Image (cartoon, rainbow, N blue to C red):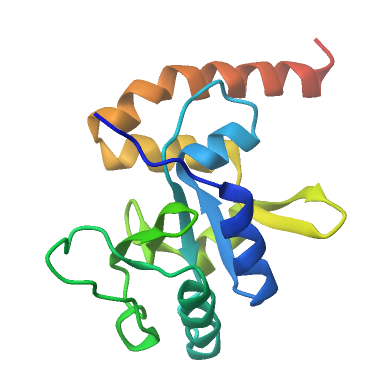
Length: 168
């Protein structure tokens, strides 16, 4: 199976340049926490506020985004269709990007933000990532095989983080 390469930094910088409110979740979030996992797309949960949806549409247009599952047509995402809890599985010029209105038990941006932290990538790129404990909980809730398989790695990492915080 051939995988498309993903330039996570290009996608994140484009979203930031357009001032899109989003939280990184999924495999890239796990990697930011230090988990030794491989991922082939970037998953973000976006704010469904109308102004943010307009900024998101502009960023996705710049990235040349279109829906992956519609191979016979080139359907592009528009703000008017992105205000739900649904998932938008996109292909961009920088690789696959999953734009999610919510994850697990309908956890949307507003619900996830208190369980997220700022992550500084460099001086001009900071993103919000889902906290490790919340990531574990959402992966457990989804129950998908690929999520269940990564849970032991994430739980072990959480144990190491907890031990380090206690000074053990």
